[in-house]
Every structure is written in C-alpha cells, then in structure tokens.
Image (cartoon, rainbow, N blue to C red; front, side, top):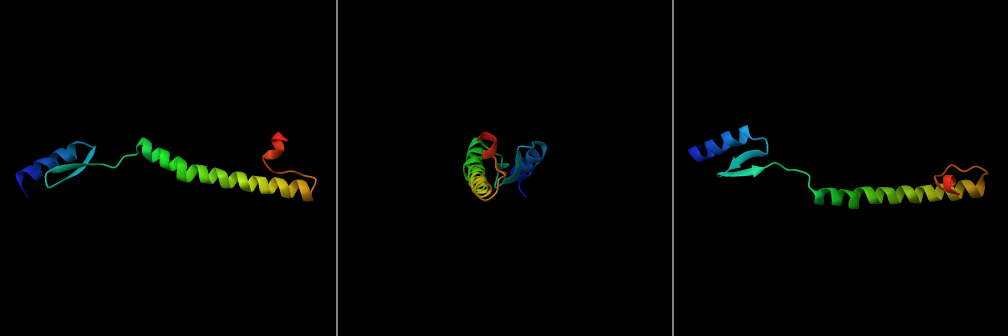
Length: 78
C-alpha cells in the first residue's frame, strides 16, 4: 500500500463522512437527499395513498349499497 493510500485511509477512518480511499480518492458515504425524498414520496407514498383511497371508495360503495352500515372513511364526511 502506498503512503498516499495509507494516509487517505487514516483520514477516512478519522472522518465519519468518508468511507474509504480508492486510488487516492476519498469516496463519501451515501446519504439521503431532497431528490431521494422526492422520489420516495412520488413512487412509494402517493401510489400507496391512491390504492388506499380506491380501496376505501370500494368499501364505501359496498357497505352503503348492501348493508345499512358504513365502515369507510367517506362516512365521516357524508
């Protein structure tokens, strides 16, 4: 191991934001960014909410048409 790589590895161990040195370059750790939050909201949270809302609408229709009870979220507003 060269002196430069050893020095970088020592620096990487002392600083938590870097993981290791590869060919003398310090590689930063992965971190969550605003774009990661945006994609999480867009591709995980919104589809889950849409499916939940659709499921609730189906339950509302079934319980109001076939029984006298209502067990859906829409019953709170209607």
